[in-house]
Image (cartoon, rainbow, N blue to C red; front, top):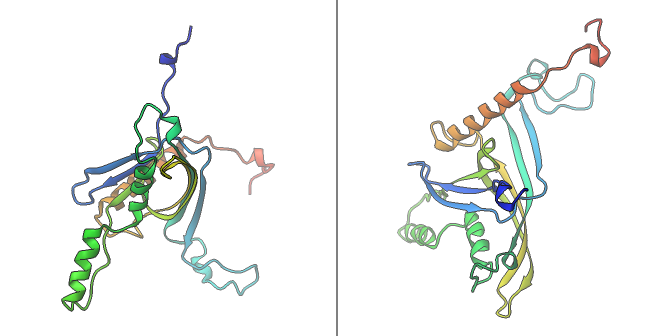
Length: 221
């Protein structure tokens, strides 16, 4: 007889905030529910330009047609759900405000960083460097661990408690995978991207190869 204890718990997807210098996790955000679907877009960085529809005027160097400038640009989109009513055993005096706030702070500088920048401005500093955020990793199982930058965070709050604290929300999250083209050489994020790409290369080698005969090209090409 199968019991609930025999059923393996699914691995959760989530976000890990990492100190880029030490490589130590600063915060781990586990998504309450794994998204039902993922939308991924992979765009190659062609060296010769995208080209036109045909003919000789393609807008790019023909000698560069098969060359790549770097790794492909990849974006992910998914919808995440947060529901306090699904965790009645967990006290939630603020509703899901904390869970929403921790995600929103991924794209917000802290008040301390803003005050520090303001002080530099008042001192007459001519050039103030943009505020550097911690390294953000998105994890989708052990085979997908990659550095990302959030590009979209849209929140639809659909239920509230008596104090108007949100208790249920749907979040549309978009992110860009950061590659060695986006990060400086030696950066921990760049090394993590290379590890992610190496994992993908290993998986590609496991795919079963087809044959020309299956394509109706038994005589060769």
